[in-house]
Image (tube, rainbow, N blue to C red; front, side, top):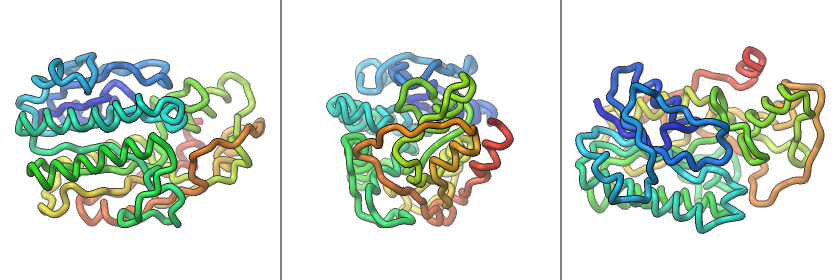
Length: 298
């Protein structure tokens, strides 16, 4: 099997690349190292590594030839930076995704697996089901949902098999730690190691569904190799843990030193995934539990 992983030097992408290589896949990694939250990038030396932009059709088109599966993770993946610069978010997440899909279509790729976001659910009641209406609160979620719609379009119009993942709060090894908008567990880890108080946004009672990065990698691989029904393509699948926990509880698990900082605009109060559809369609369910992982690793 031969895979192309966009964003494959980043947090989730590099964990997926390592897993694929361990399974003896040939892997091409495409990443432009633009993620500002990443302290470093993780290029697996056993992969074919290309530093380029997913939006650059002329440079990247040939990388899709002879590829079985494209795992599309490259994105402007932080909510607050997207609010500050929506043009950049829309370019990377919508135009970039369209470019990936077109290259995959032209190359005859078997499946494209697209990494999207639970922020598409916005203020919907929870738990979140894939049938819920979209409620985008910010340019980030709008741009990622645009990518979802393009995936569905490419499946219906061109017959390209796509799978759309809505990740909830991903944590684990290699999580970004730089800047105030990095994932919260990564920020807390760095603050704890530096001896600083943990910075809890708002009252900290907002609840999040945390899913481990290895569970996310497993979802990608299982959906890639599963014998899915034709009607299962071009659809959304929640990738979460099916349980949630407050940010304040996470902070208290990690340190007895924390301070509250100002709340942020454009963020949901609660996220919670219904993950039945992923299990029913390609047999995926999470193995990690965030409290246990924190206790054992942090």
